[in-house]
Length: 270
Image (cartoon, rainbow, N blue to C red; front, side):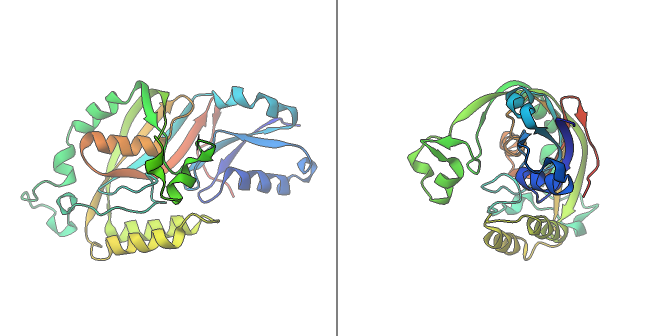
């Protein structure tokens, strides 16, 4: 019996969903303990390692394995979760770029104009040992209660958001692209529809609809980066922090974990 199992977590699934699905597909494991190592958010996908039986006792060892991600960062928006699964904040008009403006050199301070060669410089600043704040929508406990509960109760002002040291081996720029407001809203709705449970889905979709209602033709800059890092890195926080350094709202549009230690998987399975 394999005690270490590499699976692919699809968008919308939780790690616990993956364990249940694996047990259903493998009835002989129904009564054995199974745990996962290295959580992935509901909208993140990619390599997930499951430990079976007494291998669960070694969970801490597996948590320390290095990881690799591919992250699409969307500029022009930010949310309280730092991905599309959060309440979107209003976008300054200065960041818009209309499809109809292609070829027009008089666009003013659009995202494209402001980024330029800054991206590579900024990415380098996030390599090595850095401090990273925990996202407010995470299970990190503060005074005996997870951060997301403090956030939902509107009591974040009563606590200090903790931070921790993380290590990023490398950040590589892969490609840049654009997405229209119309395609973005379509993607947000589709992605959020995959997530089960109470994640404020109805409220979040409504806010995205309101924000993008008259912006179907706007084009928003995206970049894909490859991240090699140690354990404990929140890549959605990294996307937000990169935007902060650039002075531009940003969030994680897509997150794919491509590697955990020696375990690699680059394609989804159902």
